[in-house]
Figure 1: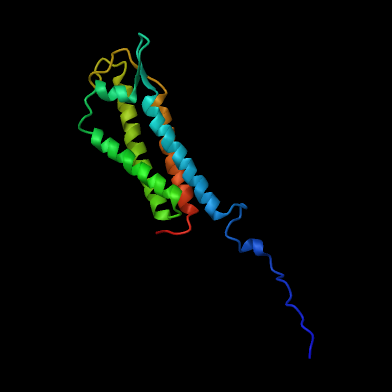
Figure 2 (figure 1 turned 60 degrees about the vertical axis):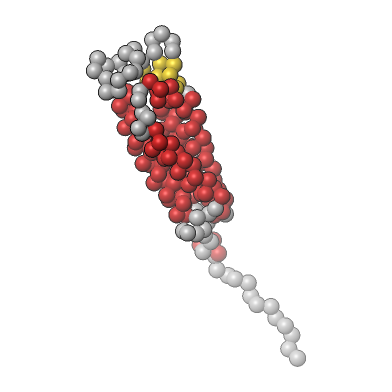
Length: 172
């Protein structure tokens, strides 16, 4: 009877065939991207209570206060549904490793960011102007940091969602 000889170990470099070149497991990279998206969503929601406008008299107006000053009852349901949809997609991206939801979250975040930047531009041109686009704002108002925190939050949601989608295990 011949003696057993074990097989030779692999001589090839396995680092070239490994799926992750940065040393992180793809599952962890997916979670990091999803957590960045959650942090961005939190910043965007927090910005609703931060000052968006400041008047010369020392008064500050939040995003919720702006909706009371200008009549946005017609678009408020669309804004609310956009935030609910983005929240749902971010939560699903965080809980699962499905790339389709992460890509959808990034697309919705970019659409919300574009609409938000258009509103901030309109808000900026309406403050301190003799002929404002948005009626009802104080004439001496100036834009503060609230809208920029919201924009940063939407950018973080989009970036985190793309990161999570690229590291996702499954598309669906």
